[in-house]
Image (cartoon, rainbow, N blue to C red; front, side, top):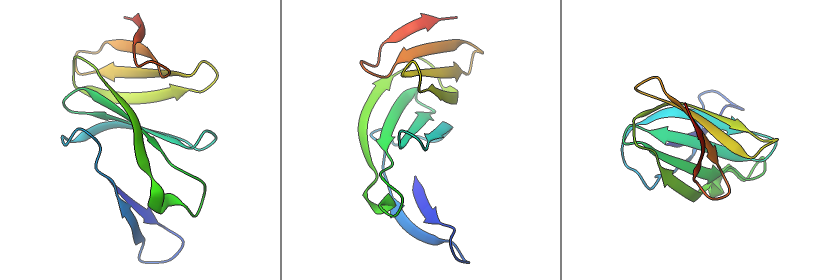
Amino acid sequence: MSVYSTLKYPPELLSSIQCSDKSSIRGFHIDFLKQFIFAGTQNGKICILELGLPGKERFIKEISNFQSNKLVRIVKYNRKRNELITGDSDGKLMVWSVKDGSPVCKN
């Protein structure tokens, strides 16, 4: 994953981050309030990265990850419940507890 600053043209590369899973990222969500990046990969891994405060993007790091069974297609974070909602390649939705990386609800 590469992070660019768009404050000037052309955009400036700030950092390149490698998630624990080296496969393609298919689902992605940024929560600017809590400063988290959530990435779902083609191998079904869900990675949580700490974005850091504005101006500190160079220090983005992975803080947690957990495994889904299927290719993750979409990722959405519910900050009020501290849950992650994912959609997979079979059209199924899962709700995950971000605290412990376990499924809360499956559809």
